[in-house]
Amino acid sequence: MDNWRFEGVTKAFEETTAIDNITLEIEKNKIYGLIGRNGAGKTTLLKLLASQLQPTRGVIKKGDAFLRHNDELTGQACLARETINIKGILNFNAQKIFTIASRIYPKWDNDYCNRLIREFNLDIKKKYIKLSKGMHTVIGLIIGLAGRAPLTLFDEPYVGLDPVYRELFYELLVDDYEKNPKTMVISSHLINELENLFERVLIIEQGKILLNEDLETIKNKARIITGDRNILEQVLKNKRVVHKQLTGRMAEYTVLDTLTEQELELFKQRDIDYSSIDLQKLFVNLAKGVEKQ
Image 1 (cartoon, rainbow, N blue to C red):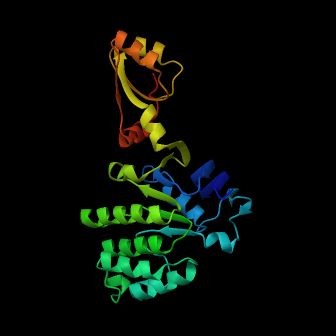
Image 2: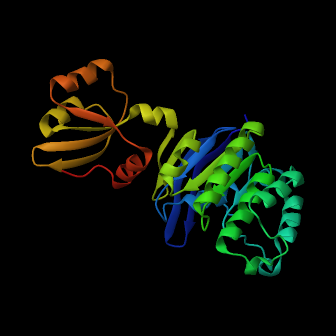
Image 3: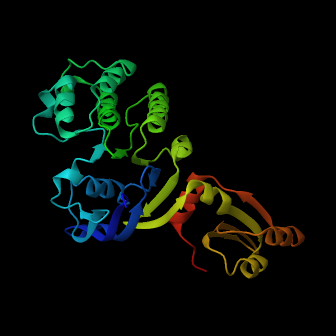
């Protein structure tokens, strides 16, 4: 198996537990959306996958091989961020940064790198310190795409980019993924903007995975259901309710579960309304949790 796996992984920083006993399998050649609030553990999870951090407890593996102290596996993962943490980087120009990257990633595609430089109008002779925040992000995106790493990780790949460059990145990513399939994990706050890229969704909160589902499955299961509180409690007692909002006798439930045609027909008979819910609203309600009565 070529899937990456977290097995009981915890990452703690002094008093803070950023990743809390996660067991997770990341399937080969899928695009994952990693969604969570600030401080939820997104960047820590990506850094663990990229071997930039080591677990406090637990292990990360690809197949039967352990990631820790494994240079071959480390070279298969590329973490693209809006800043590059290499000593002395501020005085390097983009061309030198790409030269360094080409030595790190064995499958580096220099022709594609040059195409991306043209697409984003990047001045490769200008020192990193002189470039805008958006161009810092562009450098990370180019490394992520041209690196051809089997596991490519993008941490909020839109910081400082205007809408035109964001759309260009999405188009390039989809086009390249179709030609060169790989496993990708994209951490994002722009859920509605990126949702159509995702094949599978990970929602993380306080270092724990709240949801790990194919996007199509989520769309089929996620609904807002409204009606009389007592009736809803009865008809939804065996369903996964992720959030409740109560107003007097009326209630609005966010449900993430399979509903049969018979159940939907019963809703109509009992004056229960239901509608689909987008991924961003589902994330918000999952993060809130079920309100205590």
